[in-house]
Length: 148
Image (cartoon, rainbow, N blue to C red; front, side):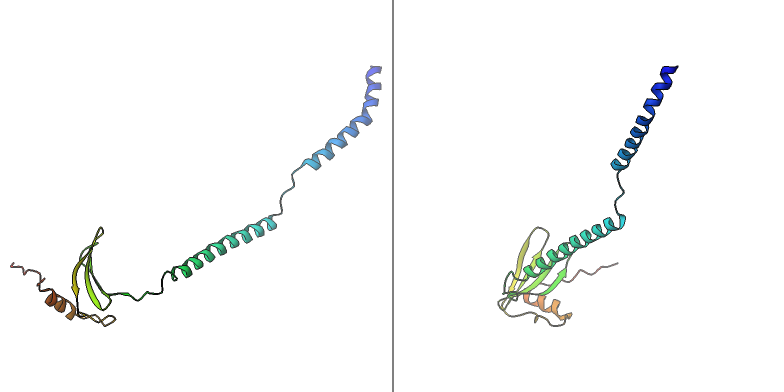
């Protein structure tokens, strides 16, 4: 056993040095927790920057869509009436003439071209429009009466 006590005494200082080095290595290799407040602030600033870029692009697109042409008043929609779920007739004014259009999901057709205005653009809608329109077309579109 003498051998073992002597070897133990030799290894004791080396063991404490090795333990100290292992402790220092563990402390230096430990991952430090990030600063939570700093991370949240940087994420918030980045998010605000992205939102500002989106709003800026939308503003630029809106401004540029108004520059497509200076002749915005060449065609005026005088009146539109829905005939069904997806069918409409529209009265538009182009170059002093009023045109009656039939509009479906697949086509747009000219129904009648009026040389003189049927309705003044921007005037208040009245029930007289339908009668005047029927008189100019020459058709009577009244619904049939029911005999119950």
